[in-house]
Length: 148
Image: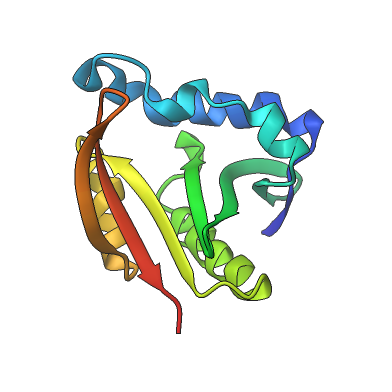
């Protein structure tokens, strides 16, 4: 298993993973969640998109960027066939390592209220809820994690 910056050749695979991961929430949210319509090509071109691969196969991705002295996790997803292998936790650990490498001591992210499993993962890995609000028509929960 390794991480690497995503290239243009990875964009279609990342989009496929995002669509598969977030499709189950479309009916409850009432429209496609933001990661399903993200501009992954722009994220890859900016150097903000990373993939997790094993034996040459991309199984997960994370999109993150520095914002106001915080490393913001825009979204992450694991391919459905690769779930329950700890990859989501590894993505979060990668984000922590990336933040430390950049001299940043805080991560933040948001999730939709209907994504209870994601929320549970973030809380279990040390994130604290800091806000809830409706933004762009989505019911979002904002979380933050200080890195020591």
